[in-house]
Each structure stands twice: as C-alpha cells, then as structure tokens.
Image 1 (spheres, rainbow, N blue to C red):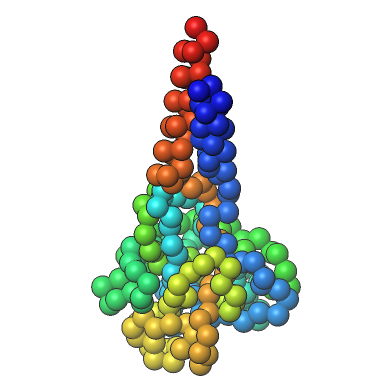
Image 2: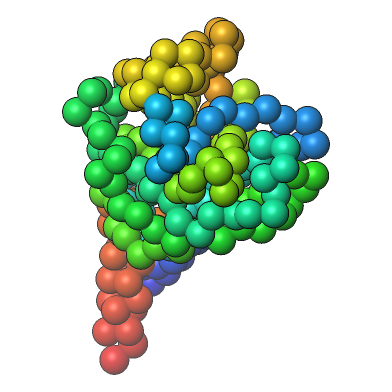
Length: 232
C-alpha cells in the first residue's frame, strides 16, 4: 500500500509544470540574411499604414503574458530615430485569416523598447500584464511613428515555423498603398510566395498548468497525505 502511495506521489510531483519563460518563439533561426514586410502606423502617411498579425495557439491551461516582442529592421537612414509606442494587436480567432471586423486601429497602444541584436536588426518589445485563455489568437506589434521622423519599419519574417502555428501571418493595409492589401491577406501571398511566412515574434510569461497536470499533482498530494496518516 505504502509503495503504491509513494508511486502516485512521485508521479504527481513529476507532472508539475516547469513554467518556462518562452511561451511562443518564432525568432529562432532568424540570421544575418532576412527579409521583412511593412508594419507601422503613420500619422503623416495614413495610406501606407500596415499591420501584421501572427496566428498564435494558447494551450488549454491559458497563459500569463509578461512581454511580447518582434524583430524588425528599418528603412535605410531610419536608424537614428526609434519610436517609443506601438499598437498591440490581439484578436481572438481561429486558424483562418482575421475578418474585416478585426480592426487593429482600435487596439491597445503600448510603450516599446528597441534593442539592437544584429546588423540593422532590432528587437521591439512591449512589457505587458495580461491573461490569455486557451485558443487561437492573432497577435502583432506595430510601431507608431510619422514617416517624416522615423521612416519605415519592416517586421522581419521567416519561413521556419518553430512555434507550431497552423496558419502564418496576416497583413492589412486599409489605405491600399502596399500592393492594394485593403483586407487581411496572408503575408506569403502579398510577398508572392506559396509557403507560409511567420513574423519573428516572441511571447514571454508563464503557462498555467494543464488540467491533466493538475489532476496528477492532486493525486501526488493526496498520496503524501495518506502516507502521513498511515505513519500515525
């Protein structure tokens, strides 16, 4: 009896979550050779405003998100000025493109920091405090800044899907300046490619335990309590 209880306790403890900080990382594999698509809100050139949003899958336990970042490069000459705010786009959705009702212009404005991580390659990061329930989401971080001051920002994309997304990245340019993309389209189709393209985003935080994990953990705790009672 005691051995069985100990086995259940060990199984429960082994099933406890590891709480890794990388919840969703599509920045892996982006090297010195990269390309990017437009991703910026312009006050002085609204027809060129373009948003990107990537398909992200949150596990059944949900996520507690502490930061969201993307890799970006700048138009030549724009490295001296780095905007400090961005649109944080988060749509609850499915493994299909957002619809016309998903308007990123009404999303949350957040402060961002820029860190040089390569040759004209920056990590643009927003520190946040939010909970995401399980499901599909479209997530993007779009810098805000006039063209006359900051020039153009391009979010770096990769063809390597290291995070397990099922759809890729969508692009919206309501003003039609960029290839007439006035409705959400895949970044791959806009770039004339057949394989999916994924924006190099990274989401940090903690993952809530899966229901099955909690059940095993409960069994382990129950086993320890039972063992303690047997000793009395």
